[in-house]
Image 1: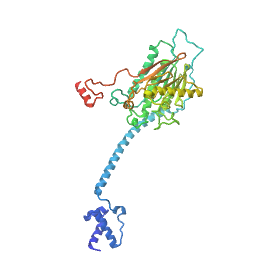
Image 2: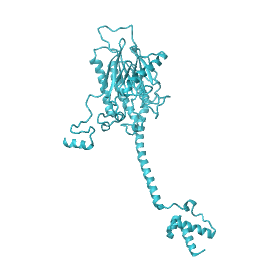
Image 3: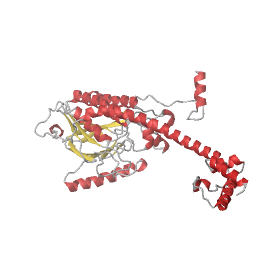
Image 4: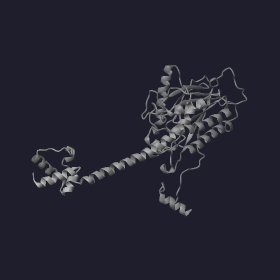
Length: 437
């Protein structure tokens, strides 16, 4: 063995890796591997100082340190991105925990509610009202498609709408004000036997789409608590005004807990159902307020002899838009045939879901509280103003006095620019307007 080999072995013993051996001798890594193989053949020894993976010849290209540095930088960037996402999730979870602690106290002891018989809803043939007094029947107000917790920014819908929990509260308050004024002032004075408040689903925006979770105005559980407070005030006010209240409840599609639509347990696995149970528990001390919360997506009840089927509308009806009327006629026919087979015929069907006010001979479709959203705006659906439907059920004439109670006072949210051709003003145009003012 030559002196050259001795020098190589000495450097080999002091080196930690093949790369450091090559750098100490001033040769390339490939040359160091080749010389090591030659020394092994000459000496007949196979030193296991380096693993087979470390002495394997790497393909030519970038230096190993540069490649390793780039991989480390990519790994660091990925970890930083995951850290940002994790921090945001932690903040949301902290808010959810606070809401859960509040809700735990509210819903403790909630059990499946058994509906009571509401005698004042049925027609009393023995007792007739005096002829001098007018009777308009029992008023029915349908509240649906509130989408509490959803956030709609004006700039995303052409400055035609704005929605958050504060706007939601104001709109519901206007609807109740108009309902009371309509019954007490617009119609001739009469003594009402009670009031029906039909809660018809999509009360909560929910998290069925990922974008709803990311752009929500408040977390889901917080929106449930906020809306329960709003509905509590509404129900108490209607109770003070009309006395007896009957509240049939059905769930919608936005409140479901499953990513996809399900049929088994779809009612119980819904934020809407949880909201109804909270309200029923909070108001159980008032015997004249009766909640009807079934385990079915449909509920049938009779008001002054009018058999009403209440359903949200996300099951077995069809598409909305221009073909909605034909879809509703077909859906009512199918359900009427089913109920006739069960021996429980229906006279009228009330539906939500489509955010479009539509009246038919045997059906009523409700509008919404949220109004125009990014979804309806981008799909170019016909805009329907935020409104809720009210009607009266008369023992002789059936359903009368149908009306859509507007949620807004008519103050337009749109910003107009007469001097500009564009109807969607840019940031530069908005800044010019501020300067001119």
